[in-house]
View 1: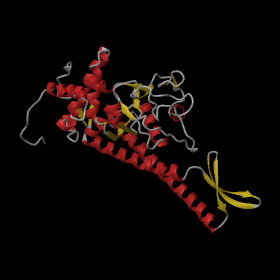
View 2: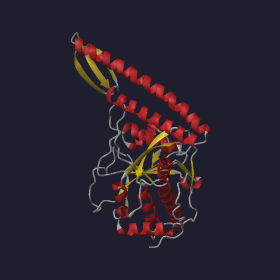
View 3: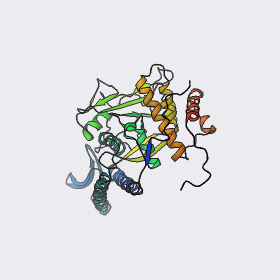
View 4: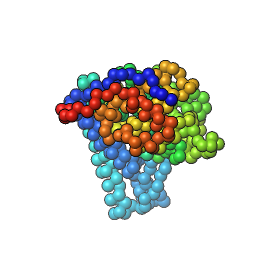
Length: 358
């Protein structure tokens, strides 16, 4: 199918200033330091250590939520263990507090520069999923992935390109997601979002795939359509009763298999959020494929093609690490590769400049 409806403008994005790029980098580094410290806290210093008396004898107990474990009777070894635990816990909490102040200061700087991007709600969802599920394996697809690509390139897409009232999260159902509460209990997606993001989020029916809050913002969970359809995937079942359940959709398997892009984006209040999404070439190819579906709404198809065109331009102009060459085209299903090839042919070209683009 021939690709049509492309905007002939050379780009739908603008370069960031050096100052903004520098402040973005600073905030990204703040996040990386903070999440590293938070991972350490959650791994080594959750809960408490205290002496408890059993049959007239003092024992050292480590307690996290409802879970308690004896570390042995009072001795030089257990005395050293509780001292090291309390010292380490205090040290990591102080580090988190210092980094929290740096995050707040840097957010104010970015707000002053008017560099505010991803919606606050989407950012909170992504942060909490990362905090409570270090290797959750989920990817952002759809419009919000554009924030990752512009961050990689040091540009801003035009406002209309990124406007959306939801976030689409693609789950890799080949593995079961694990979200862990501070009490070390397993946590469902719905409960995590209600407790940590916004208590007004509600699912659309038992085990629906969408959560919506009182402001109308939606978080949707999707997964690839299994082949055959009756195949039971390890990550398909809800994490707990009445939790959201990702809806299976056709055409997502190769997005799950696509190379992953991990970056830090800035939210609407200047705070960082981790965003994992497919390689931008796969994003553009998938948008072209969706736009070409016979039952696709005409308005949505036009937006799909516009976003695909913008990302292709971004790759060609700013992201040479993602070559749109024959080797890449060979990795795509032939029909999708053909759509992408047509899109590349339809781009306006300026020809080689023959001199450095200083």
